[in-house]
Amino acid sequence: MANHLHHGDLPDGLALGPVVAIDTETMGLDPRRDRLCLVQLSAGDGECHLVQIAQGQKTAPNLTRMLADPAVLKLFHFARFDIAALYNAFGVLTRPVYCTKVASKLVRTYTDRHGLKDLARDLAGVDLSKQQQLSDWGAAVLTQAQLDYAASDVLYLHRIKAVLDELLAREGRAELAAACHAFLPTRARLDLLGWGGDEGDILSH
Image: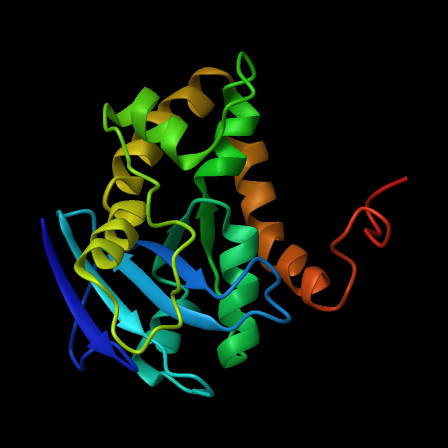
């Protein structure tokens, strides 16, 4: 595993292939309030590119070009949050997307455990550490432990997706999953506009 830390944007000319695993680290769990601090990306090759986002930064041309590229599938776990965080930071709506959490909920109905740690263990045979999950991602200098933790959140998503795709096909729910994934960018925009909570969710009763 190799981690590559970049400041402000992805380097020019970097190609991560047709399916890119992405995760974000923020100052909290409200994308309207809590700023984006780090974006992690992997091509599924065991390497991770981490982009540290400065406070007040509004542009990242290479990163946002890839986020909006219709030829690149962006692979997330809990895409709803990450799409909102990226949109709030840069004004670019990420699409097309695939969410391992949504796919898991659609097809692994025999369990209520759909967290990344659960999927990594059950579908990829990897035990992820969550020790750094609540650390300060807004620090000017991130520790090696933080970078390793952040990288682990994307390094196994391709393997997890492959298993989930097999299960979705087996259970006849691949088309339903695709429809859910297509809606996620809109769901993220609704969250940012205040229609995300149980009380204000226009999809609730």
